[in-house]
Length: 67
Picture (cartoon, rainbow, N blue to C red):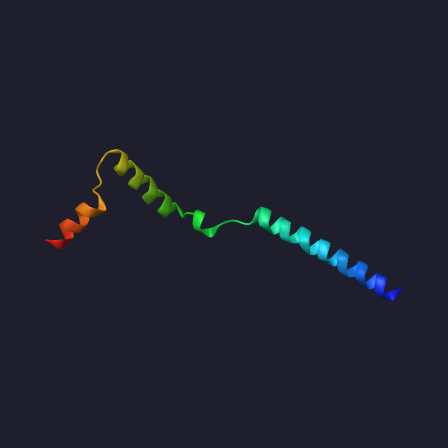
């Protein structure tokens, strides 16, 4: 009977751990998706410049840097 109690105890522990892991996965965040206020400002400026066609392609930049 002692063995059965230990198996039940282990099972309950495993279920508790599973629930904790599911909670962590649900509430986990990706640090790469969080921007500082400065980074957000730079991003918004870059998007605006792209929309206003104020940017150049990588190929154009490489040619310009070769000179």
